[in-house]
Length: 184
Image (cartoon, rainbow, N blue to C red; front, side, top):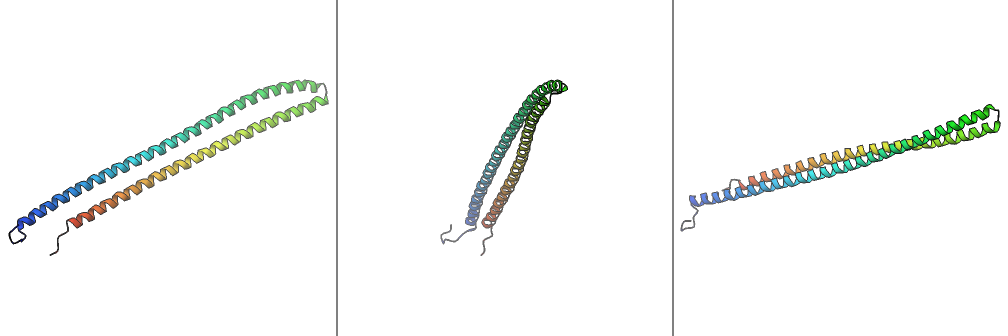
């Protein structure tokens, strides 16, 4: 500076250069911060999506395993029922031969046995209908969960986009304030 403390053109140029360097440093730091924030948000979104996908796959596997158990149980019951039907057919054949002889008490006994096996059959079929109803409900619940996960993921993407947009606006305002022409 000059001896009379007056600001020279060279001083102004040096101050301007210092301000530009400081501004470049601020912009570089803000750029790094935006990139780091973007990377953190991306990593968090990826992590949440992976958790959601893993949960959905786990529930799907549980539902599939439960359905498989239900089908195996139904198949065992069908096989047992087939054995019971074969046994019942043998008893019916035996009863028919006795009925052909005209024994009324055998006829009553056959009706009791038929009703007993019919009730068992109805009970087994009702149980299978309940299993299939529960499996259908679980499948619908899984679909609802998948829709909710998809909605949550979409909302997360929208929110992150707004936050990045707000950060860009703040950087623009900061640049305008730093680069504003001084009023004389």
